[in-house]
Every structure is written in structure tokens, then in C-alpha cells.
Length: 544
Image (cartoon, rainbow, N blue to C red):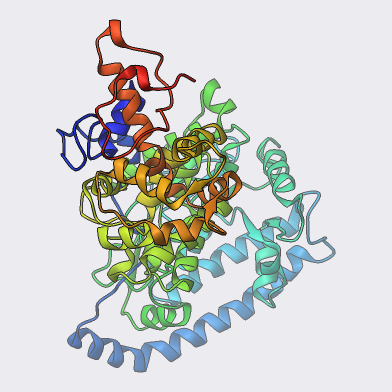
């Protein structure tokens, strides 16, 4: 009877009650707690407000500190280059064997010292907590939250472990040579086998018994504002080896380091940071996390456990945002929507609703076409009705409420995606579309006329004077609607699925509500229906 309850929640009238007589409505469909909005709506935005007094201070300090620090950083990079060159000379870009012997010992010692000197010259005061695990204890470091390019401090403090980096970064003059000195795992965006090769390389190195350097990974995969921990990608957890969590904190009154998708640029952050008297950063090495047998076989489970441990230590929540949300943010901005409109917690939505990125991106286009005229990039009841080409009625308000999961009077993109998947797409199968078409085809001639279309919608929506000519013309290619036209429209516009099947569901519910001795097999309602003839008996209804 769950189908009956859903239909009753959508409907404005009950059969045999007379058109337009609003019946008692049952409670709304219960919300799944797993689909509640995240505790942090947008972890990819940072707004740093700088007051007038602080601006004056930055200007005065910048006159002295900025040129000095820029020169010191440039000098240290030049000093580090020869050691990086010694470490990588005669070595292929993608290493097959680790760098060992005197080259590794001398260059690692020199580069660690110069790395600390460089961050000190930038004004960073680094405090380290906890004990750094050995390669045998924990072959992998996982650092979070990842919020800035300055997070490279963790790499220096941890003793220059290997990192996973894009292949293009190794081609950058000066910086690329120093990156290669830490024996990175390089990822190619043009190689279709790159992901598989990267995972195989991580497994090979982490199970080498200490032969290779430890690997440091930022499992979030993108920068956030440190207000939460987003989804950890499973790559670092696939080998099933112990990992050591590394926490990063920047306990400063003025945040000049956070580098997110919406906020200061790379150059602006460098200048602001260099103009501070000092910038504090804390690097905490937590106890090693050892996976159990279940977690060894399930890297996502292991990643979630480690993330929860780190979030608890930081005192912040976790969300299911991921890099794909950032891509949707950019797409939303290109569609003239607020960028945050694209945030849906992609990991959770894709896993629970079986959606891929391309499908969600297509739905963003549809959402933008509805919300483009509204303020704030959200759909109100008026925009919803205008898009469906239907008047604002009780039925439409009920349907709108099913989408509006937090009952704030508007539908955001996340609610729209969930609504289509949970409410509309299950009612938009080939079989349901055929049944709905038969319902509209009153004279059973294989075509739906405008009169037939209007008759059924008036009955199901409870609006006797409903004008559906605009909607009818959008579906029909001529004077009537064929099944192929009806099917094509229903598949392209799943929002109508609940409306098209409301009358059918209500008829079914009505049959179930009758005494057992007068019930017949519930199925599609008789096509011989009209707003004036609601008081038909159950025997007038057709069997499947």
C-alpha cells in the first residue's frame, strides 16, 4: 500500500468525492535521514573580511616583509635545485626502482633543511604534535583537511615522502625537478589506464617493506575551507596497509591561506600571507590506523573510518561532497546560477540513487531552465507551475512539497535531483507510461485528443476549469497525441510522471478502501471517466 500512500500524498481529491472537494490529506512521505541536507552547505567557499585597520597593517608590513620574503624564497629554490638535480639525474620520469644510496641520503637531508627554511622565510611558525611513524609502521600518510597549496608543509615535516601528482607538474621548470626528487607517483590525464596504473604503483610501493619512501596523500582530492571533511577517495586505502592520519590546522585570527573555488586567488593569498608578521600552522601526527580484515577488503569502509577519526579529533562534521561537486559548481556558474546551486553531495547521491555525473549534469541544465528567472537560483511554486504549464492547485502544491524536502518553500538543485530519482523516475517506466496513455485514451482509438487530455487532468488535479491547451500543444505534433509522442514527452519530462498517474493511483486506492466483498482486482481505471461522473462503482473499473 506504499504506492497508495504516495498517490494520496500527491493528490488533492479522492475519487467519488466530487471535483474540487479537497479531502483530508495523509502525512507526507517520510524523509530518509540519509538524504537530509549536509551540516555544511558549501565547503568550497571562503570569504575573508579584512577591516580598515588590518588593511593598513598589511600595507605597512608588506612594504618591508614582502620583497624580503620573495627574495628569500627565490634564493632557497635556487639552492635546492642542484640537490634535486643530483637526486634525479639519469633517472626516468616514472621510476621503476627507488633512489637509494648516497644520493638519497644527501639530497633528502639537504632538501628537508631547505624546505623548512623556505616556509620559515615565508613567515610560518610550525608546531608539530605526535610521533611520525616509520615506513614499516605506516607506509601511507593521509593528510586533511586539505585547504591550501601551503599544505606542502606536511610533506616537509613528514620527511619528504612521495606524493601523488599530475604528470604535468613534473614538467614545470625548477618546481618540477624538486617534485621528482621526492619520487612521486605521476598521474596522466590522457592515459585511459592511468588510474589502474596509479593504484598498482601505490600497492607496489606500500607493500615493499620500506624499500620505497612513504606516500603522503590528501584523500579529499580538492581544497575546502576546513569547515568539514569531505569524501575521502579510496586510492590510499586500497592496499589495505596501516595509515597514519595527519591533521593540519591554521589557528590564525586572519585567514590568509585558504584557497578554495570561491575566494582569493593564488597570487592574492601569497601576497597576503607574506605580508603577515607570522602565520601559525599545526601539524599533528595521529596514532596509526590499522585496518581489520573487513576494511582490507573494503577500502571505502576503511577510508570512512579514518575520516571519522580525524573529524572527531578536529571537532568538525563530515559531508559527502567531492570533487565532482566542484565541477557542478562551475557548470552552475556557467548557467548563470549561483555556483553553490550545483552542490548535491555527489558521492551520496550517486551511490544511493545510481546516478552518474553526466546524468546529474544534464539535470542541472533542466533545473537552470526552470530556476533562471527566480532569485537565488531556487525554484518556487510559481516557477514550478509555470514550467509544468499548470495552475497552482492543491495537487501541484502537494507535488511541490514532495520535492521541497526541508519545507522552506523552495526547491534547490539537490532536492530536484532527489525528487526526480525517488518520486518521478520510478513512475516513469515503459509499463507505467503505457498504462497512463491508456488512461488518457478514453475512446481507445490509440490517440489522445485535447478533450480527453483535459478531462483526465481535470479529474486528477481537481480543477474543473483547467486549461491544458499549452501543455497539450507541447506534447502533440498535430491535433492528437500518439503513444510515441506521449512516451517521448514523459521520458524527457519525468516531473509529469506523478501527475499523469495520480488519477490511476487514486482509483487503485479507492478500490483497496472498499469492503472486501465488493473489491475487484485493482488496476487501471476505466477510460470512461469524466469530472461529472465520479460516483462510479468498483465494477465499472477494468481489470488488467
